[in-house]
Image 1 (cartoon, rainbow over the protein chains, first blue to last red):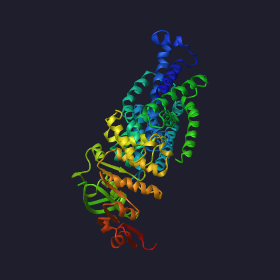
Image 2 (cartoon, rainbow over the protein chains, first blue to last red):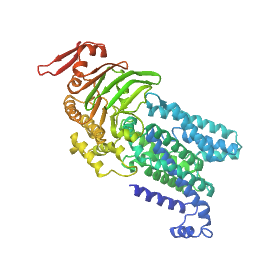
Image 3 (cartoon, helix red, strand yellow):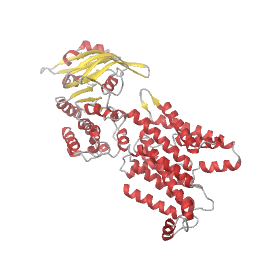
Image 4 (cartoon, rainbow over the protein chains, first blue to last red):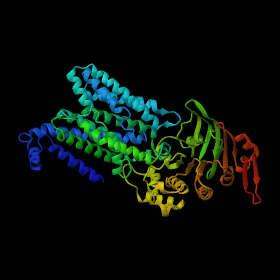
Length: 316
Length: 254
């Protein structure tokens, strides 16, 4: 299953390199990739960065979605529901205004959001209550969203238009500097990738996980901060791409026979963004609808199905 | 000496839950914790597991304060909380294998030793035939035995159980009691019990809590008698001794 998802992701990435206003045949794509200076100039300067950044951002969203959903024991608790993504978007937009690097702004916003949530949701007697976390996170998300809107309203028309597109989640205008930033994010995913066993044990409940020798509190804080940085970093690359994190968790789980597998969630997230970006560039190439629109179009039905499954399991 | 507790106090969210408990448990056998709801039983069990750091006093396990390496602690103390829930889709064998966590090397799969421990645990609770079944599909009694097998696979000297007999029908209770009695021969078991008759029959020692204080402790023949029970629960009890010497305990009002 893991191999199937890996193959799917690679295939979609190749398709994405070929996709666009002018579709490339396989042999044309191969020729272009082999000749960065000549025939491949367009592919190398536009499509390669776009695909690399899309893969990294999708993988980061998927990974962070799975980690939050598992840590908070709630399939709805993805970073875009509990306010981390919105906090990061607020930070990124504010950073633009102050001339601070966008990634730093996004990280700052994401960290403030997760710290606020951790402080609000921790209960001295009962630990973290999944339902309370989601409701409080939703409130934080709305608050951060309102803040972002206020910032955008104070911008000029051109900037505001660009900001609105970015807020929908877009890979348009991606170039090599974004690739460098994307690669900076990869080390941060490492602790989460290695946390598969810990996430699996945390699903048995905090007390049992503790009894099995896990440092539950430290893991929760460490993995939570790491997942927030990863999600916020992805926001700084392509904006708050909706539904990727939310949907990648449950689908990645299905791919891993119900177990929380970080690798599967990463692959699903990356494949999801690739698919949405291919659609964005081929369905209505002239209108240039943002990639985030298509992730929402695919993701919304997935959310509905997830809720149905939860209800069938009496988990809601 | 598995446990040596002195002046243990614990507060949760500012409220004192345990107030200056002092007791020691000798090696082996079954220790029962009894008390009304809210008397601090679960808090005491969690403190014995090292889950709650004491606000006052000390908890020593095998002569050492609990703490240090979480892994080492998990190899000597296992706790089965009441709230344990199996993730959907897990088979019995997979669930029981989770008990090997403190023995696994980082990032490496289970060794033959681990598999053997899982097999032994499944045998001990009589679930060998159901090992490949999904946990959700089991009956309540089978599921409870699967959880106990998980704790057994952990191979810790001390086993803490929070109301292991809850939600089981009478035959399953009897079956589990027999299992626990066998386990008490080789491990130190500390468990929370509601049924005083069962406590009288399987416990080697009983700790009685009221309002976070230890009101009585000792052999069942001393603690499970009308006076200490009245002090623990605030109501009168009939303690009958059957002709074969076994105890039966019921509230007098019944």
